[in-house]
Image (cartoon, rainbow, N blue to C red; front, side, top):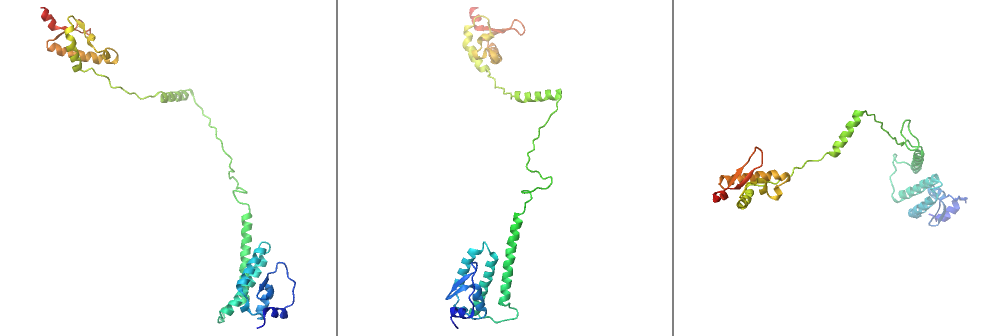
Length: 265
């Protein structure tokens, strides 16, 4: 089979190239991809000498340049490159032809149709996303637009309600818990020891309150002091040590040393 460059120069006329044409350079062939495709279809070039890797790399470089301004042209060249790869794969891996298999032209048309379909879907999706959005660009009738509602309550109170509210507030603030402290108790045993020490110094009638300790002589502890001292005095009366007298009911209580009187007599 003849060399690719010689075959191309003998069978194809010279054509003007467009800046958007895919110019490939594959093992001696340099020119538009569509010219190479026509030569391949007419079997005037040896596809075994064409590097699919070089073709793919040059196609990807071309796509990077034109995909932003002419996607349809890039899709057309993708169909051409795919068809070239298909032809070479048939040469490398021969297949038995059956009635169910599609021809190369039909496969190319289907691939081209799928590419156009994807491009149409992309354009429609962009149009849909650019449409005004409900709740952002426009609103339904009656939809609130973020206006803050300020409520100002108004109350009506008569004199009774006003006084009751004031009393409740005063009750809550004036309320305090009551704590009852444990009182101090002057036990009879302590009072008995105290009277036994002091009884020798009481020759005359003396009021019972004179024998109370200082801390139990006045205030809230005085009652406990009087009760404990009186109980101790009655115990000493029972033992015959003291005498007790009360001139009037609920009057003051007087005590004196009984043994002192017996000694004088």
